[in-house]
Length: 439
Image (cartoon, rainbow, N blue to C red; front, side, top):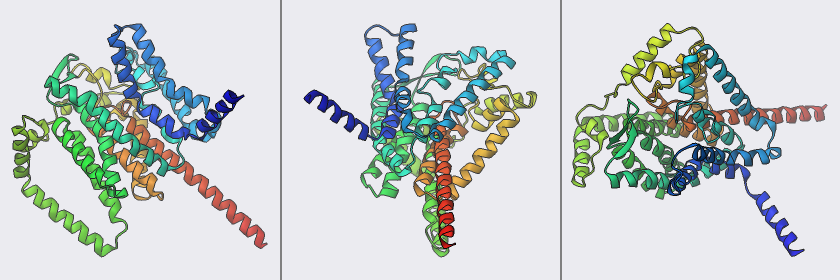
């Protein structure tokens, strides 16, 4: 009897847990779970092969299975759009392969094929798990709690081993492993927690997060890349714009003028500041590629992106009105760069979907303007700005299929619009009831 009672109590406690937060935490921390799992599998002698891949695949389904077991707790409108999206992607993948058989080898390319699009830990599933939240304040609070663990684990699992080894290992343009003094993915990974640290300091007045923000930015500057720095600067610019909204016009003019003067002073003394930091770091035997590029005026070097972009633009010109299908840029880019993607979201959308790609771009631009400048919910707005900024890495690198922050951004926009529609319906009903009572 006591054991049955205890089980009921435990069950009630479990029910009182916030399932939205649990699911999101489990999904975001898949990279920690999978990294730990891969390490353990290697230690017990399963370093590669079908058994290893099967175990990893099965473990990625864990958050999704928990969601499906709790499906009755959610209204259809919360997850319906994701399953429509998922089915649409699968249909387009099949149609793309039928009309463009050259894509076959790229669909099954290890680490860069459809497994990275459809596996439950892949980026598009952010669209599901972020849409489950109706309360964006609660979502922000959850993300802030996640950010510190995310930051620490990224540093421990990626940075510390690289410092010990004296280099990073990465895949070069020819597909072979190379050694580097910096790491693109590390820099971009750190932008997510660093931006949340900045948000917590600016909007929640938590002073400790100022130190976290500085540490995050310095690590990106030293070991990351220019694209990641651009992401941080875009976020700072957007929050400055949002902070100016509450001021009167004279104050806005004064603040904007002050920012312009400060920017001009920084630009004037920029070389001296950069060289100072570069020299300080070198005294500690720390070499920052990004700082060196800045110091010698070569920050605009594109590392072959202009060649990739030219290839994709030529492919768009020669292609049909409907594009080449999902991953349609890969056959054109892979001969000169192993990963094969366009390194620019707009080019990737157009080369993949043709005229429909232009419509998607137009939608993304209009949606961004609405969310950044006209969103009525301050938490939804700040969430959107956070993920919009991180997603801006897609202007210079990666593929939108692989960046989960891009899909989180879309999910926040969708859920905000859904919540606004529901509020408007309630207002209409209330108005109707008041008018009815008056009659």
